[in-house]
Image 1: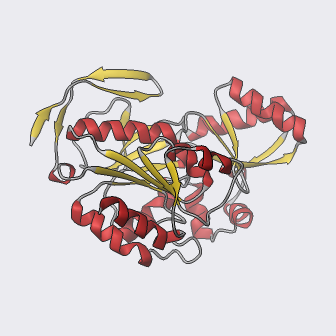
Image 2: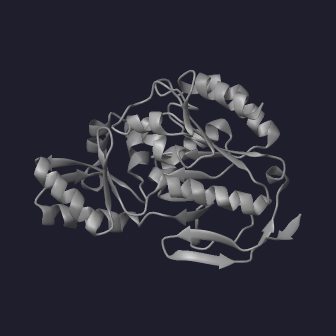
Length: 302
């Protein structure tokens, strides 16, 4: 089925483009009334065992009802691909904290401003290219008088040692496209504050996570989910209800962009934890991990 959509606005790093697009609507996009956004680790997958057995019922139901499941993660595309293969995932996904939005080849025949072919995927790059990010990290660190060690400074063994990952997994984590994990090797509190301010002045973000800080420009998971939601709604001419399921308080920024959002218990807690209790859209899940995710999905679509 082919239809001429009305003008749809899609934002990217270069600004806003408005145009008419001829869109092929696949049957898979005609039926659903929900658009599900989900974290991976700690939600669909058990963070300790890597199993998704407890989520299989809901995964099967989503597939049966042809409801799009959008994966969103801080991980790289190379890290996410094996997880996608395990669960037979065939929908778009968001990488590196909103740095990239990837569409499987042939998913939708839509001309999207700013998109480009990246292997088997069509990619919308919200984040600045990795090489530029690494250069900026080194320059700003030098200007601020702080020492930093990013993944691009480390060999594979050093990344594995610092992250606790197996060598193969460390190699996947090193295959970055938008966002650079790093830590300070020599800096006190005032120096770190000076570095963060200098980064902001130059259009970069230095965000403290768990073990590592993350340095990027343009990576924004909330903007990514809003853009994808708008794209799906325009492509299907349907007011899809955007539903998000997160597994950590780090997911709260993009969860707050949802029509309905659930934060599963038991995940890592950051300084943003207080926001979850203040949000009108984020509600706590009843159980952690895949079992809680499975229950939440079945309740949402029932």
